[in-house]
Image 1: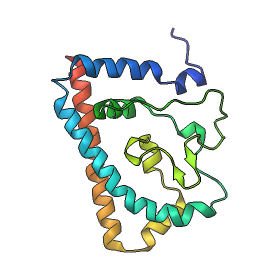
Image 2 (image 1 turned 90 degrees about the vertical axis):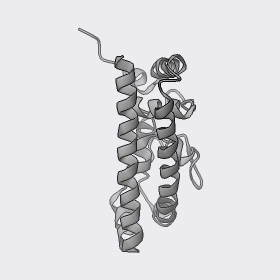
Image 3 (image 1 turned 135 degrees about the horizontal axis):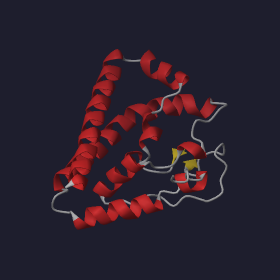
Image 4 (image 1 turned 90 degrees about the horizontal axis):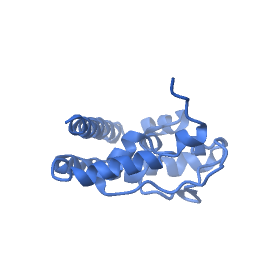
Length: 169
């Protein structure tokens, strides 16, 4: 029976990154459609970011309980596949930070990582006050945001499907 990973091993995705980036290097031609899809996901992520930023700028500065904690800041395997498709690397994480500590990438004006390169959960987690604020303004803009978010999710899932299928071959 395989021994469970320690918290440090679980959070350290270096081995996953090396494996996945090597796979991209070996199968570059086969993964061209995946790379194009990743660029579309990145573009949609940045487009939705303007809407999100307008609301986080109002809600987050006065928040007493910061959502952006170290335990939530790590890229998962699906995030690493996406980053490799973009030709990007995972950030270097400080070892030994407590999970409840504020995220090391949290600056005075928000996240220091470009929105399109953040872990998926960082972009798409909305606390109740933020969600309420987003829904309280223009219904048309909120609907458009939700349409873009749905499209982004479909494209990201298609990207992961292409990777999994190529990996099986």
